[in-house]
Image 1: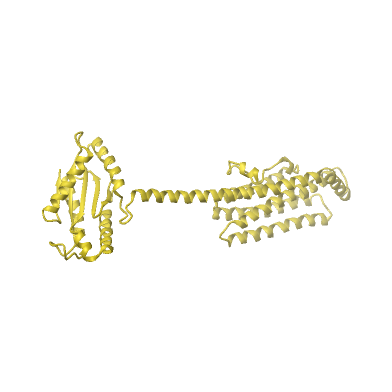
Image 2: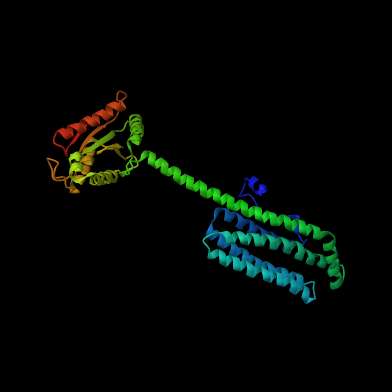
Length: 379
């Protein structure tokens, strides 16, 4: 398994590396064998990505191409052999292959995992290596002898002698190598997929942590921390591009009396509702809604002229009123309301973040002092 762990280019890795030792010196059949091996390698790469549809397509393609190859190869051997038993034995090997592939394919289609696909790859590597090196090479050696005028019996003896003298050790060594290779390859694939899944979960977790870092847990709006970041960023952009900077500050009127009367759980519900109202009003990429503390909210945007900014703030104010959330202890209204103070101007070099924030806060205070459910602004 150490070999598998040292492989770093997983997608460039071949489960079944082709070798000249697999060539039987017939170009057509050799090319067909290479095609089968190529499909097997493609299947291995798809297994890494866990692409279910493509895996099934490749298995089907492998099945169909094997059928075509076996038929074509059998036609080739029939040119040279009169003894039907030799051809029958070879055809039986072909016939044993296709049902096994089909069986594993059906298992794969009915499974929620890809373990069966790994089993298929393991089977294919062993079967192809053995069949090409042992059976096809033996047939090829016999054909070479037949072409020199030898009888089928002499050709068979020649092939057996050649195979026993040299190929037996070679076959055993090579088959052991491919057995280990197949196990290492499958191990590598599963290890790679496990790492990808772990990385995916880590990305999701990091995204959640990032979201929590800038989000108010109760309302889902951006929090005060992110307000400070966006406030400075949009202020600098507005000053640089000479566009109007809009900072709206909203406060829920008589929220303490509402909490005292209806309880904190109901108060939290109100804050969520108002948060949704503000969030719904932010429809452009440069619109940001925040809960900056307690019952105080803010919206930062750009480009709204005073008249448009007044209409924007007033729509939020009237929307909250139209919700008809009872607040009979407010002292001035039977329903919940909000007050708003905002600034609306192109920042100058003399403006500072502190001064801009203070200006909007002062206007909010004026709106509260004027009787609540009011809008005050500075242009």
